[in-house]
Image (cartoon, rainbow, N blue to C red; front, side, top):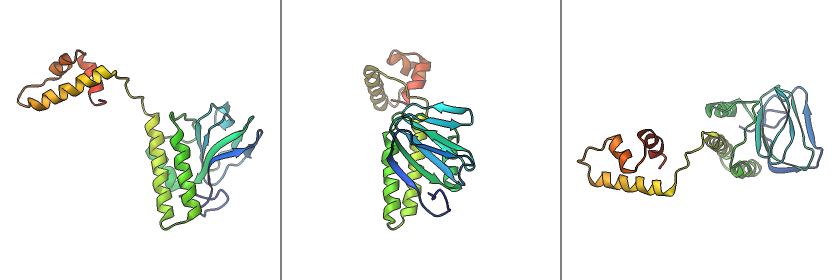
Length: 200
């Protein structure tokens, strides 16, 4: 659930929120909730390792009671929201860590989903809290997916060859299709075939 940073009631979320150059947050004792930040512009960000100059697109989650500090030397554009422990467990389930800078690429979906969360929070329509929780899960899953090991680059000719192989296999189900035979039929090694077949 979203929280207002100074209470335990549903609250604070903003997408593509602008601030003037030099804007900063300095919370020496942190907050009693989690803070999600997605910076579309660079900032100096306090982490357990010290101040880090981020690149555009950085994502960061401050856990409760951790000192929060960031400053923007230029115009700041960012998405942010505060959330509770139950939502934090969703972040953990995705294998994501707190107090760690992530660079999801592409990242357009972050502002898009945050905008939907913000709209739900403002509208307070029927079941808005359930919708917000669903969108938060979608956001965290999407971040984890783009941070996964990048997909293999597979050229179009190989994709077509593998698709043709699959059709041939389906047409001749009585034949013995070993991995070696399949790899040989598309002129690649067995180990590469293992890696790319599922991708295709």
